[in-house]
Amino acid sequence: MKNIPIGEVLKEYGYITEEQLQRALAYQKEHREKRLGAILMELGFVTEKQMIQALGQRLGMKTVELSQITVNIEAVEKVPRQLAARYHVLPVDTDGQTLTLVTNDPLNFYGLEDIRQLTGMNQEVLLAELAPLNKAIDYYYAEVNARMAAKDANQSIEEPVIEELEVEDGGGDVPVIKLLNSLIHRGYQTNSSDIHIEPFEDKTLVRMRMDGTIVDYVTLQRSLHPSLIARIKIISNLDIAEKRIPQDGHFRIKIENENVNVRVSVIPTVFGEKAVLRLLANNSVIDHAGQYGMNDENYNKFRRMLQSPNGIIYLTGPTGSGKTTTLYMVLEELCKKQVNISTIEDPVEKNLTRVNQMQVNTMAGLTFEVGLRALLRQDPDIIMVGETRDAETASISVRSAITGHLVLSTLHTNNAVSSIVRLVDMGLEPYLIANSLVGVVAQRLMRKLCPHCSYEDMLTYEEAALLGTDRKAVRRAKGCNRCNHTGYQGRIAIHEILLIDKEIRRMISAGSAMEEISAYALKIQGMKTLKTSALELVETGVTTIEELMKVAYYE
Image (cartoon, rainbow, N blue to C red):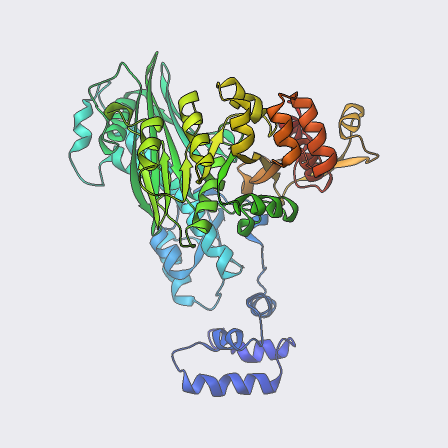
């Protein structure tokens, strides 16, 4: 079996011709360091999937889609990560006697033999493509490392009370340090936005927010909590002796060659301090990434707004709706032009090249208001204000827009039109709003159904009435191993865009009602509401009625 000629196998099963095989062999003579299989793929004669299928047929091995199988973490723990990564092998199941392995190269006899000697178990070998295999290795070993770190940390606790300062000493092998690093790594691997470390009377619960939903992750011994919080405070430059008031900080950690900014919030609770770590990473996949996450229609509208030489553009939505992410995507595009871009943020969530970023520091007296006044003396073309929180910041932003600057900022409102009312409530004169406002973009993030486990189901009477359609069925969430049993995998942005034209300027100056402005935008501008966009995603099977209700509730 060791001498199976891959070229002959592929020819036998009709994947390549004799001519293609001879061309590949001739190429190999000039590049002896390359394997024949790799050469055949490089020349485009065969795909990796075809090669695996041919080997599977010859060797009597099944080919699998890793996304379709349930992985047993106990099996993964049998093989060290170093071996798994070196030989591109992932253990996926075990019955105590036999270890089921997934590999892309069944002829890697040395690797399989090393694992056999290490585990002392029989082997069942399955085949899968390399890219999803390597991704699965990273994913499941992050899970193993986090659980092992939690186990080690729990076992290291012998006394009920631990001095917090002990975590300052020692290297990366200290259980608490390993635990924190592994939790952050796991959060990164699962695209979690936040890690919650919550103390209770008899335990500490670690939960992660995945795709906008909190998921229980691991339980720690209660006596471990002070050391873990102290470690977080130390690396975040917080006061470890202060436990009576909330504290905010941040630190940076390197994961897979990416610098991940972690924003830290610590608050006192009845049973101790609770910490929330927000991971500000770039590893999430965004639909329509080249269009700021927007569909074609909304992208064209938004691009018109960005072409304005001056004025103010607001992005609105509740906390966690992706406003800041969209702003960063816009700034990354705008900074390619010959312009001076300055920002004032709290905090700076991502470092951008060719952009001058300033972080709010209220302790030192650097507020949004003070920072914005200073930025106006820096000869900016474009200003980004992280959040418009008060009347003073709104007033300076609007006046900056009138005096020839393009200003980008965020507001917390439920839809685009209500932003105008919000600005009026802040005390701004309607004529200032009318003359400065370019447009408003309302944004939401909706969870997408897991493609591996979603299923079709009949509509109820109430659901049919809500959808206002003749449809009989929709797709629903179920939950599987690939989506952490949530039924959802990833999120998609929906938008509601209000362009401020001459008529809307007149209506704002005249103090027209919100309903009147909204009716005009829907009829004349063809504005698509958040609810309408969400309905379309439900009808196309991208998301569920439950997700729709989160948006439609406000209408």
